[in-house]
Length: 347
Image 1 (cartoon, rainbow, N blue to C red):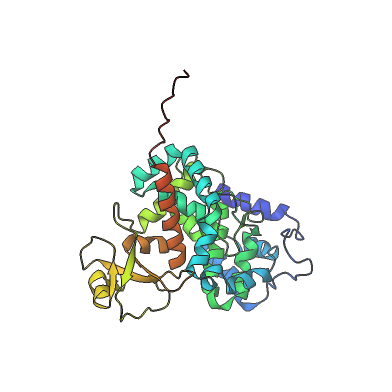
Image 2: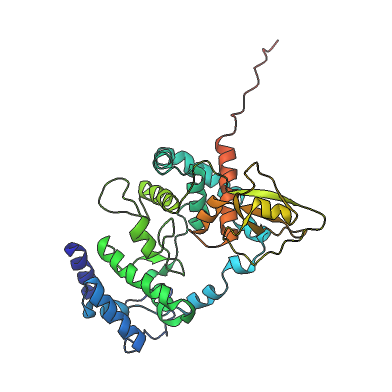
């Protein structure tokens, strides 16, 4: 721990105060460290996490506000796109083919993690495919800039992002990361699996025992970390994720927004005219999900493992995309190899 703190302090002391993210607006003023909420954050982190106020202030002094982060945060795609459109973005021939290639390249690590954590490999691969296209797009924002912007300039979720900012500072110290160089998503998610800093510290796995969980470059760590995340959130081996539905001519259900809580059962859905394509006990907990198609309304039903996927991202559309990509990958990986036709002798 002392080594990590020494490295963090050395990094901050060596970095010039004018060092900014490449994508920062050239005229953007830095954060005013005298703002009461920022001063309070500095004091709290220094008091509870074993850092000095000087260390925290010097780091925040070099963080740069990112107005673009706020713009993106207010209109994420999952809130504005109907399901069919959202699906088309993620379930593409390219993403499926790249997923098959990824699976083949990392088969040993996937099989090891699937056995250890009891999570099917297709869901591990699908999450990485949806999150970052198998590590290709891990984010372009400096994490310190994105997290500080949301912590201090985004009141709707300031409490959450101030905690994540504190967690990022600790993560940098523990994993010997340069906090001014780490890049991630507009929300501060990190690495190929896009873990938030608190998730990184809690669920990341050092699968190859090199004393550091690397979620950018070490695929053994990355694969094990995704599997561990789903396992820790209650993945049930062999249980279903989603099922299709058929509606009675005059169904009486009422869909409550895009919630993901398992607030119904197969029996209660049936009583309202929703027939589910699944051979499961009638008391099985479930959630009815809107899955809009080009030609009109459609619905699917999610089960416990669907809810587990939403612990990764609390969006029904996200969980459906992961499931559908997983099914496509599973189908292609387990397809019977084509049998060549017998050669016909030339007369």
